[in-house]
Length: 334
Ligand SMILES: *[C@@H]1O[C@H](CO)[C@@H](O)[C@H](O)[C@H]1NC(C)=O
Ligand SMILES: *[C@@H]1O[C@H](CO)[C@@H](O)[C@H](O)[C@H]1NC(C)=O
Ligand SMILES: *[C@@H]1O[C@H](CO)[C@@H](O)[C@H](O)[C@H]1NC(C)=O
Ligand SMILES: *[C@@H]1O[C@H](CO)[C@@H](O)[C@H](O)[C@H]1NC(C)=O
Ligand SMILES: *[C@@H]1O[C@H](CO)[C@@H](O)[C@H](O)[C@H]1NC(C)=O
Image 1 (cartoon, rainbow, N blue to C red):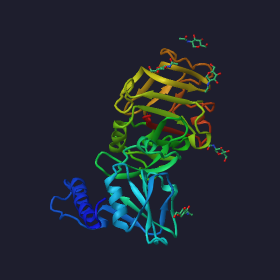
Image 2 (image 1 turned 60 degrees about the vertical axis):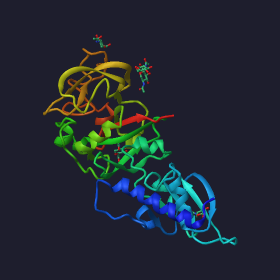
Image 3 (image 1 turned 45 degrees about the vertical axis):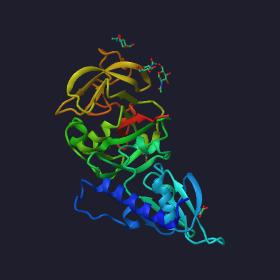
Image 4 (image 1 turned 30 degrees about the vertical axis):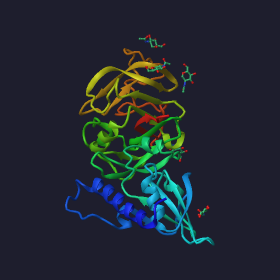
C-alpha cells in the first residue's frame, strides 16, 4: 500500500482536481484548496445509518477521506470519534448522504460524519429512489441551474416509480388563479419552497427542470388522506401528451390510465382543456373521446382541475379540504 506521506500527497492532488472541476465555472480565480473542509463537510458526533460499501480500519481522518475520494460511489462516511485499543479508527464508506436519507441522520457519541461536497446533486425524486431512498417525504433536489429546493417525493405508492409533487391545492383554494386558470407553461408559483397539500405550485423553471428528468405525469385526489388506490386517478406520459406545453380546447389526448368515480380505462383518450382561462383539466360529462365516464357525472363536470362545475362524488372535490395533486415521475432503473 501507499506510505502515509504518499497518501496525503495523493489526497491533495485528488481533492484539488475534484474542486477544480466543481468550481471551474463558479470561481475561476479560486486558489487550489488543500484543506479537508474544502472537500468534505464534517458533522461532529453524527452518524448516518445507511448500508455502507464497507468498513475499514485506518490510522487517521485523512486515510478514511482518501478511501472515500478514491471510490466513485462513496458519497459520505462515518468515522469513529475515538481510537480503539489498537489505536486505529473504523471508517465506514457510504453510497448515500444525509440529503438522500435525512431521517437516518442522527446525533451519535461515537461517530463523526463527513459528506463529500458536490458529488450527488439529485434533480428529481427519481434519483433519490435510484440511490436507495424509500421513505415518502421532503427531499432536497436541484434545478437545472444548480439551485436546491425542498420537494415532496412519493417513493412508495407505485413500486418502481418515483414521483415528485409539482402542484397541490384544496377545493377551498380552487378559485386562486394558479390553480383555476393558469396552464402549466405559465409561471405561477405558490409556496414553492414549502411543499404542502393546500396551496402549492412550483415555479415554471423548477417544473421544466423536473420535466427533463421525468417520463410520466399523474394527477391524484386527496393523496394525503387516501394515498394511492387508483380511484379518481390519472396517469399519462410526456411522449404522448406533453401537459406542460399543452394549450387547447376539447382535444382528445392519450392517457395510460384514468379512473373517475370508479369508471376507468387503460391506454385510451380523454378530452382535455388548457388555456388562459382554464387550467389543465378533463370533463367527464363528455363522451366523444374513448373515455366514457358520463354515468354519474354532473353537467360539465370538471376533473383534476378548473373546478367550475364540481361533483361531490369525485374525490378531489368532495369537501373543502379535499385536495388535487399533480406529479412528474419516472421508472427507477433496475
Ligand atoms: C451510533 O453509532 C454506532 C456506530 O458507532 C451505531 O452502531 C449506533 O447504532 C449509533 N447509535 C444511534 C442511536 O444512532
Ligand atoms: C375500474 O372499473 C371497474 C368496473 O369497470 C371497477 O370494478 C373497479 O373497481 C375500478 N377500479 C378502480 C380502481 O376504481
Ligand atoms: C398500455 O400501453 C403501454 C405502452 O404502450 C403498454 O406497455 C401496456 O401494456 C398497455 N396496457 C394495456 C392494459 O393495454
Ligand atoms: C357512454 O355511456 C352511456 C351510458 O352507458 C351511454 O348512454 C352512451 O351512449 C355512451 N357514449 C358513447 C359515445 O358510447
Ligand atoms: C376533511 O375533514 C374531515 C373532518 O375533519 C375529515 O374527516 C376528512 O378525512 C378530511 N378529508 C380530507 C380529504 O382531508
